[in-house]
Length: 250
Image (tube, rainbow, N blue to C red; front, side):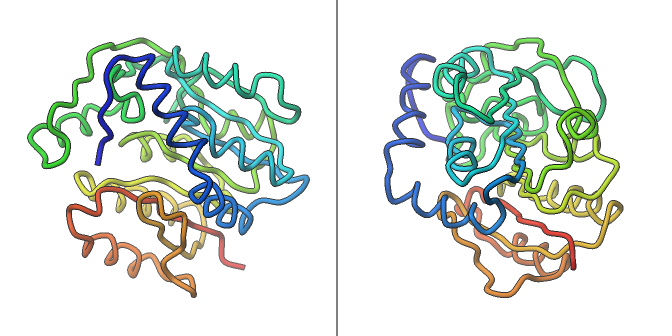
C-alpha cells in the first residue's frame, strides 16, 4: 500500500532510502532482471522514478532509456544517473499519442504520482490509501513506445510502472515487444484485462507474476493469459500491487 512521508524533498529522500539502501531487495531485483537483460541489451524504464531499475539494468550491462515526468524526481534521477554511460534520461510521460498531459503529483508520496484520474478515483476511500492527496498538477510532454523504438531501437525488455496509466502506454505501441512488465494494483485490477487484451493484439505471449517488492516470479513455468488473469482476480485486496511479466512465445 502507499508509503507515507512528509514534504516532497523528504519524500524523495525516502524513496532513495527504500530503493537504493535495501541490499536484500537489490539482490532479488538483480536476479529477476538478469532473466531478461544482459550485456549489450537495451532496456526501457517507463516511469523510472529515482532509477533503481535503471541502475540494475545498467549494472547488468544493458543500455537504458529511462523516462520520468515528475520535475523534482527527474532532477534526482539526473543527479544519480546523468553521467552514467549507456543511460539516456528523458523528462517525459509515455502514452497513446504524442501530446501533453496533466500529471497529478502527490508531493508527500511521489511514488504514486499519476496521470490517471481513474487511479485517484479508485483510491478515494480505499483501505490503505487514506490521506493520499494529489496536490500539484503539472503539464508534461508525452511520447509513445513506438516513437521510443523508432529513436532508440527495439528494447530487449521494457518495464512499465506508471500508476494506473499502463494501458495508455501500451496503446501507443503497434508492434510486439520481446519482453515486458507492467504494474497493477488491486484497486484497479480491471486494467490488467485491458493491458492483456492489447498485448494479445500485438503478439502471442506467455505470462508470470511478481507481487509487491518480492522481485520473485511466482510461477516456475510461464502461464497463459487466462491463468494470469485468474491469479490476479484471486489476490486478496491487501496484496496491493505487483507486476505482470510477459514474453513473446518462442
